[in-house]
Each structure stands twice: as C-alpha cells, then as structure tokens.
Amino acid sequence: MREYDDAVLKCFLENQSQLFPEDVADSMEEAEAFLEDCMAVVVDSAEEVEEYFEETGVDTEGSDVLEADEVFDIGDGRYLIVEG
Image 1 (tube, rainbow, N blue to C red):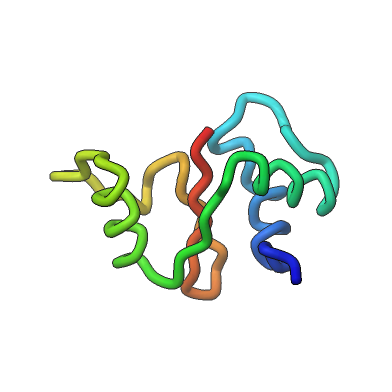
Image 2: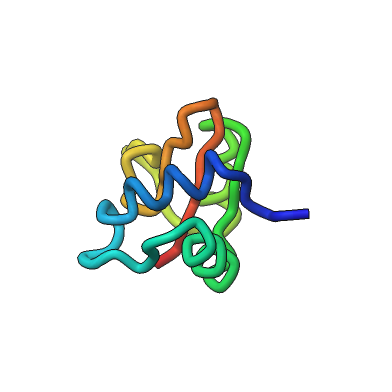
C-alpha cells in the first residue's frame, strides 16, 4: 500500500515552491519518493498539525502553524507536513 495517495502527491507537486526555491519533483513518482525520503507526515486536521509541531519541540506560540511553509493544505481536511 502506498503511503501517500494521489491527492497528497498532487498537492505537493502543485505547491512545492512554497517550501523549496526549485522544484524537487516533476512527477507523482518523484514526489512520492521525495516525501518518503524526508519522512513527510499526513495528518487529519489542523489540531493534529498543532500537536505535531508541539511534539517535535517547535514553539508555535502566537503563530498560525497552518501558514508555515512546511504545511500543505491538501484540501480535504488533511495536511501534509514536509520538513525541508
């Protein structure tokens, strides 16, 4: 079973420039390989994005974590978190 579904991969391909100055993937296969290599995480809600950053020790006080460059809104209520 694939770790990242088509919606996640498409979201990353279309929005990768928010995190990287140049494209790191040009196809769904490249996107999947890249996300696997950097251990990107898909979470099911905005609250889980907050929890993820808290668990990793990132201070999010006073900031909207959903606006972080590392956070990609998949558009179906889920979020992709990619640590560049």
